[in-house]
Structures are given as C-alpha cells and as structure tokens.
Length: 298
Ligand SMILES: [Zn+2]
Image 1 (tube, rainbow, N blue to C red):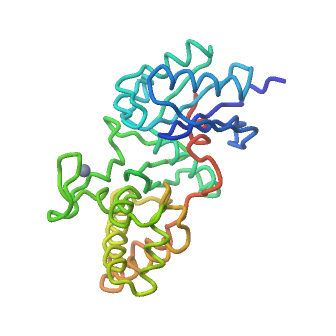
Image 2 (tube, rainbow, N blue to C red):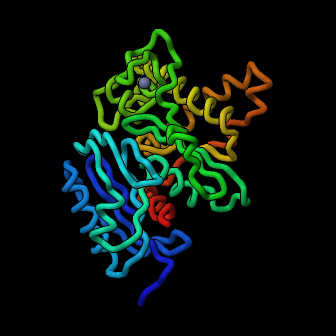
Image 3 (cartoon, helix red, strand yellow):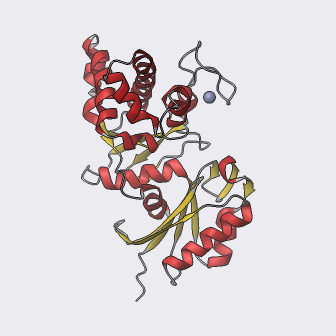
C-alpha cells in the first residue's frame, strides 16, 4: 500500500550509513544500517541500495552528509572522511531512484531530528539549537521545525570561533578554536587512554587524578563557552547536546551545569540566561540524523 506522506532519510557518516522510512509525523516505520565506503561512486551506490531496501515506492528522499553542502542544489564538496571532493549527490541519486532528493549538512539534519523528538511539545515558533560535540564541533538551529541556513550556509559553524589566543593550532588556520578543546575529537587527543575518552576522563577527575582534573576543566570550560555563545547569539528555547560526546550522558551534563552555575554565581546577567534550564541531551538510541534527513525531504 502506498502512503504518499512517507519519506526516506539517509544519514551518511564516515564509518556507517543509516536509513529510515518515516511517516509524516516522523515516526520510524523501518530502518537499516550499513558500513559506508569511501569514493563518490560508492556513496551514490550505497545510498541508492539503501533507498530500494527501505521501499519500492517513489517517496521523497532526504540525505544528511558531512562536508560543505549546498542544500539548494544538493551538491556536496570536501567530504574528507569519505574521500569525496565534489559530488552532485541529489542529482545522481534522484536520476537512479526516480525520487525527489534533498541534501543537508549532517549536523543540520541531526538538529532537525533531535528537535522533532526532544522539542515536540514546544509551541509553534519555538527555536532549538543543537550542539554537535563529535569529531568536530558545530551547531544547528531549528526554528518552527525548519532548519535555518543563513546567507551562505555557514550558520552554526561555531567550532571555529577562536576562543583562546594561546590555545592549540587549528587545521582551519586559526589558533584556540572551540573545536580544538570542546569536541569529541579533541578530547580523544587530550585523553587518549580510553575510547570513548570522556566517561573515563570524568571518572578519573572525580577520583582526584590531577591531570584528568586539569584537562576536564579545560574541556568543560570550552563546552560551557560553546553553550553560552549559542544561548547569547540565538536565544533558543532549548539547547540540545548531541554528537558522540552526548553518549557520556548525565555525568557530562552534571559537569557542564556545575561550570554554568559557577559563571551564574558571579553574574546576575548569566543567571538571567538560565542556561542549565535550557539544556537537554540528544536521544542516543534513535537515528536522529536519518530521521532529520527524512523530515527535511521535500
Ligand atoms: Zn578552527
């Protein structure tokens, strides 16, 4: 039976591709997963295979992918993890599947997916910021259930705000970018003993390990900077923490709220922002990137 409101969402990551078939409310009807392969032809092939595995109907397809994405044309550039330099992804997938295809940056897609789950009770017009603490650091902004893109698509690229002039050199050419301290990738470098490092770092710091306390202090300070910048720049109803680091769960939230409370203690202005009250963790057991890609499909 054909349901015309069903859509497909595909989330392409550096190691895996996840796909979902959802109804118009975003409820997942079926899902699948496969390892991702590098190369332009392989990416197109893997996406088309997943689309036909999810449905034989021609339904709108949304795709989330890292790198520079032109959401208007569906062209993607510089997807380093997948060895893609330039790919007309929407056009290539659409011509093979005969379905309309829409492409979004992966963080924007995850923002939309997380907002649809975490903020479903908020009134019309609400805004939700999604802070992705993954290999890199970037934010997405969803207003009234739609992704905000800005004038040139760089809205939310806050990972490359140079917050510390004495900080680490960043591959982007600046020094002390938030991403060099606050991202999951950065913590893996600063505390390489465990994978994932954050739960172990928090545990060792709680047990009084001096190095762990020093590193955790810097990391949490930079994440708090990220949250504060997000709140002051966008004033969203909610800030959802996502990405691999969100899997740390409550201990991460507790450390972050302790730092935000420290800032509020000295400042009526910071107190008035009520940052802890706006914080949520992204759901870790749902494919939010694929769900958001489906919701972004036209
Ligand atoms: Zn940078």
